[in-house]
Each structure stands twice: as structure tokens, then as C-alpha cells.
Length: 208
Length: 208
Length: 208
Image 1 (tube, each protein chain N blue to C red):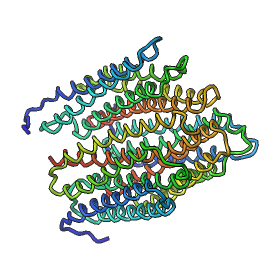
Image 2: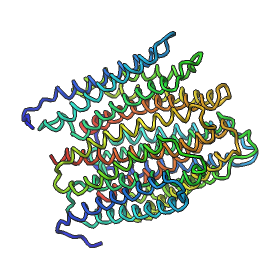
Image 3: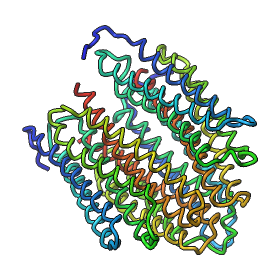
């Protein structure tokens, strides 16, 4: 393997930004699931493609870590940030696939709180994509992680109220279990966005 | 931001101790839920207040990390320990809120194993509060983490036997799901106490 | 405590290898559960014994970390690798115990996908046991982690299809909940194998 001895930091920020933009593609697809007459199978298949793209970006990042002599910050932190961005995508793809596999869109409509969870994820994806290029200057990053923490609280509330509705007797037990699996994946995606933000904060603390 | 150049280690031990004492306030409230004729809404609201206090202590700690030049041990470990103590509180607050939101106290009584989980958490909180000031001398900490590991096993056993009871047919499926959510949060709080102890152990290993 | 000043690296590789071989003993027992006329109580009890052996190996490793002056790689990574190998065992033991405690073997047969999960775990255990001695030379480790990632995807797929079957109406709600608990532990064991492989990869990245 060839090593580059001159720092080529730029490529790391580009890959993080690319990974985060891919998450916006993911939440766009999850938002489509709320549209009337949506083709759920097609959305689920496109989510799988976006997830594969995410895997490729992650592997490109890992290769770059291994072939670069001087990295812009600790290689372990680069590694971790890449892996966490990939986690978000895994949970979003899982949510979409389960909605399809469980045939949940045969229901008249999905609960409102589930759409709220997706809306929160969409906002998280957008501000994460905006924040990634700022890793270069390490400036204005605290706005980003404060906002992610606020959104994560909002997502928690939507998730909690969804469970209250699911357990209220409005649905039969098996439908409850199916929807809970989907909600759990969306909640895990939201948590993963928070872990991304926490890692950015840790990196910023070290650099300060 | 002003930097203090003289080590002010004391404040870190004080904040960890304060955070752990706040967890004792949390388990005191969870214990109240077992009392006959308890006002569940009031307990749940006070748990939210205690959780806010926990958030404030955590933020004070993070600010202190960022404004202190020399920290008593790795700033990442301080960061992690603070974040894990906060996790315990989050799970305890969630358990209390769900008991209220799901109307579980309308049942004649909560299962015995759920009270056992709370008792284990109460013991964990107390010995964690006693151990935090000992971070200064790094002495007698192994007693603490050995005891937490023992308690965590006890908590696991209570959780496992609770599930056996819940799945025995004594309750209807939706009540089972509600209680399982509460039990999961209590189990997560117990696991988080173990992560706190593991982090203390990691710090002690580094310093030894 | 006596400190050895001469590096005694060998013992660390031996303990990792021993821990991984113990996991093969664990999956052997889980495979027994698929045999006709199996004594489930006996399998469950032997799993508890294997889990105790795993705990002892982990403690021996921790003591070795604390009493050794020069370790072959970061003591935190040694610590983490040991702890993750132990996690795998904890989840496998939990799965076996729950199958026994919930009386799931009274059913005519367990779902095919659950056996597929166990088969994946068995392969993970075997290649992990083969990889551990290679930590010494740090050679041919990438084959191992690539294969674990492939197996983890296979395990995910089996888990996902198991849930589709469980939620299809083939079983009553309480049986679904019991089987899901078992499947969750097997899935957690599979994830833990991936965390072991990720840690090995992190160590290899640092050493490269």
C-alpha cells in the first residue's frame, strides 16, 4: 500500500460531507412513505441502494485512513465518525424495509407520531450535512450539536407518545409489535445522529 | 473563555459526587412508586425535575473540562464518566414517566420483580455516590466496582424472572408490552451503572 | 502486586484464543438445542458453566493487564477486546437460558430462522478462534473481519425474516414475545462478534 506523506486532509472532510448528504437521500425516501399511493416496494429498494452507497463511502474512508500518513485528527475518531454515520443509514434502511416486509402500508394510515419521527430525522440529516464541512475550520460546530440534542429530545417525545398510542388498544397485538419494530429503528437512527454529534463534540474538545 | 492555569481538580470530584447524589434522589422517587396510594403524576413530575438537575450538572462538567488547562485525568474519561452518570438518570426518568403515561398504577399491584429491580438501582446509586469522592485518592475503588458487578447480576436475574412472569399468561398482551417497556428502562439504568463502574475501573487501570 | 518488567506478550494472545475457543463450546451447546429429544435443562446448565469459565478468563486477562509493565498493544484495547469476547458469551448464555425458562422446546419445533441464527454464530465463533492467535503477527486479519461482516449481514437477514414469520399470525402473541427475546439475544451475540472484529481492525489500524 502506498503512503502519501503530504497531508491530504481535504478528502476526509469531503467523505464525511458525502456520507451526510447520503443520509439526506435516505430521509427523502422515508418522507416519500407518507405520500398517498406510494409504491412501498420501490422506496424500500431505493433505500437499500442508498445504504450500499453509504457502505462504499465508509470503506473509501477506511482505506484513506490506512493509506494516509498524517490525518487531520486522531485516526480513531475519523474511524468512529465514519462508522456512526453509517449506523444512521443502517437504521433508516431497516425501518423502510420493515414497513415493506410487514405490509404496514396496507393499513389506512400510519400513526402521526411515526411521521413526526421521520420529520425529526430529516432535520437531523440536513443540519448534519451542513455541519460536516465546518469540521475543517472547527467553527460554529456547537450550534450544530446543541440543535441535534434538541431534535433528539423531540424525537424521544414522538417515540414515547407513539408507544402510548400503540399500547392504547387501537391496534391488535401483532400490528403493535410490527409498528414498534419500525419505531425502534427510527429511534435508533435518531440516537445514532446524536452519537455523531457527540463524536464531533469530542473531537472539538480535543482540538481546543 | 478564560482558562485557569492552576489545577482545580477538586471541582471535578465535586461534580461527579453531585451527579451521583442526584441519582439517589432519583431512586428515592422510584421507591415512592411502590407506596400505597402514591400520586404517580407528582412522582413522575419530580423525576423530570431531578433529570433536569442532572443535565445541568453534566453541562457544568463539560464547561469545566473545556475551560480547565490541567485535568485530574484524561478529559475524554471525565467526559465519558459524566455522560454515563447522566444516562442512568435518563433511564430512571423514562421508567417513571412510562409508569405514569401507560396508567400502570391502575393495576392492583406491580409485579414483585419490578420492585426488586428498583431496589437494586437504589443500592447501585448509594454505593456510586459513596465511591465518587474516592476518585481523588484512587483508593478502595475496586470494592465499589466489584459490588456494582454483583448488583448488576442481581438486577439481570430480577429482569429475567420478571419476563418469565409477564409471558406466563397472567396479564393481557398490551399490559405485558407496557410493563416490559418499564422493565427495559430499569434494566438499562442498571447496565448504565455498570458502565459507570467500568469507566472508573478503566481510569484506575490507566493511573496505576 | 508484582510487576513483570520483561514483556510477556504471549499470555495475552493465549487468553484471547482461550476466550474465543470457549465461545465455540458455547455455540456447540446452542447447536445441541436443535437435536430431537434434547435435554434443554442440561444444555442450559452447561451454558451457565461455560459462561463462568468465560468470566474467569476475562478476570485473568484484567489481572494480567494490571500486573504487566509492557503490553503488546494499548491496555485499553486489550481490556476492550476481552470485555467484548465476554459479551458474546453473555448473550449466548441468555438465549439458552430463556429457551429453557420460557419452555419454548415444548413447541413442536423452533422456527427455521432461529436455527439459522445459531449456525451463523457457530461460524463466527470458529473463525474468531482461528483469528485470535494471528493477533501476534498482525497478518491475515483482514480476511477475518471481512468474513465476520459478511456473516453478520447473514445473521441480520435471518433475524429479520424470523420477525416477519413471528408477526405473521402463525403463533399467539405471548409465544411471539418469548421467541423474540431469544432471537434478540442471538442477534446481540452476532453484533458482539462484529464489535470484536471491529476492535481487532482498530488495533491493526493503529499498529500499521
